[in-house]
Image (cartoon, rainbow, N blue to C red; front, side):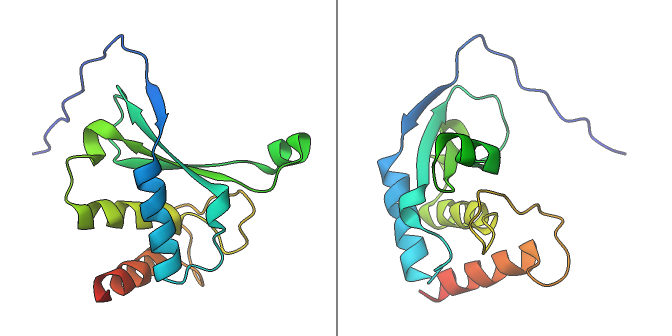
Length: 138
């Protein structure tokens, strides 16, 4: 009836993160071209991870308010693309994944993240569909 998911083999390799300038350029392009004016591109950083056993294509990390206050920094976000899963995708699918991560950033740009389950006005999935439709019109 239901198939059991195969678990990935655990490796003893350490996860490595490197600055992803190519992803940063694409994120900046998407923000500017699609008019995502609530996002401050200078405060969105991009990294590529290698040796991760996660199944995701990408993840977004927000800097919580306690860290912002403690370190005296403005709100910041980091988009992590998982090399093993992300790099082999076609360019348009990669951009859709990046748009998915950008959709997690709230219009208040506070360092918080929007969950997938947000209901009502500003619904995550409606926001994402609008962004992808605008991207496909380009």
